[in-house]
Image (cartoon, rainbow, N blue to C red; front, side):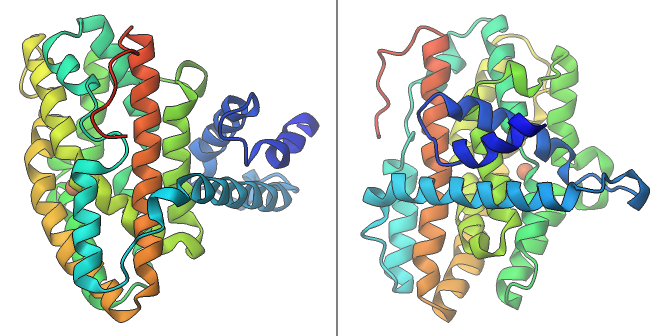
Length: 308
Ligand SMILES: [Fe+2]
Ligand SMILES: [Fe+2]
């Protein structure tokens, strides 16, 4: 425990060095327990001190990310129309967009390779609906209403079968996937950890809005390729429903998010444009790093992404 506490502060800002993997693994393990509903008698006496240390390490981590992506966010417009156009361009030109990993998954990956890919993705998935629920706290009405509609879709509109999280769980169960932080590449853990950090710390609420919005905007293309690959490998439609659904539904989610959430928030306070844009780029930057690490694993490292 003593050694772990030292690492929290030392490794938080380490994005490339030897401390990166360790920090991301420990933070992922912490996050796996963090939001579990509990009872007062279950909590160790020093938990609140530990929480505060980890919270400050998380903030240091996010700040180092903001610094790393600064060259990509120096030209974010603060006017509503200019900002939306900038944001929507990320779909083509943002980090990791057009990555050759996905056409390769669709056309060439073996079943074993696909299962490995899915286990990484399941582990990096921080639970869109909970991130959304945390992000929407105290946001203005127009944005909150759209977030509520999106949340309701995540909840299968009140039906357990249609809930998105368990849908991914059913595919994971089909393949017997049960990833632990030790079996997952640190880049994938870092992506999930960042999403949690943005949604948890209210100073990053607008960053979280941007990160969630850019997921909606960029997920359909990736989901479409994964669905195609799963179909090619003979996975039944029922089991790959999560990817088939997101290849279509998130196109609608993204349009509504940009119109109802982004427009209204930036119109109310133009400073939010920069925060939303940074959150989006941070999310894509992590995605690009995970794709690169997956390509290395699959021996595709020499294929460069179309947009960096
Ligand atoms: Fe979803
Ligand atoms: Fe969605």
